[in-house]
Image (cartoon, rainbow, N blue to C red):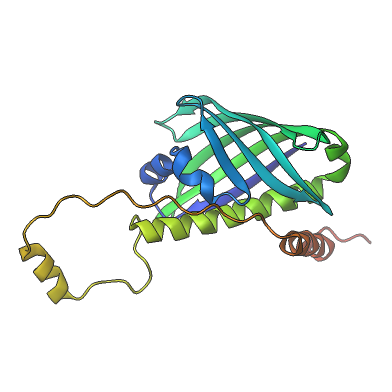
Length: 214
């Protein structure tokens, strides 16, 4: 099955791309994800816990960047994983593309997903898969934005320093560069309630926003 998702990053494309390509930095922002091994610059091992319907699943596998176009801010990624309890597998091929959006960037994601084994029954129906992917992307974007604000990559709301403080800082002697910002804490898996709420609202949107029949 194929579906599209998008999310926004509060940085211009060049900066946003550099952040998104730093897999070690952004992996903890993905709900339920854990980076377990860096094989090389384009290959990573990890696991992710997701919920499809009433069933909680944990997939362990490999993510590999097959193509990276830094000039056009796009990439093609393949991922495959097996459920820890042997209930099936998931294989995904995704393309990512950044484009300017206001003062920041919008990330467009197209995914071709194949589920096999029992997990294919748990995730039966494109609507549930899309709702799950949408919930994951939204939470990832929120976690990433919070991490960027904490690390100083973007200005936090109402955080402008008074002019006197700026002048004092300029007159102060130079100091050694500070340590890199700490890695974000791993994001918790999306709860079953929040996912079911997303499915429900998507269903309502389709019910009242779809084409009318005579």
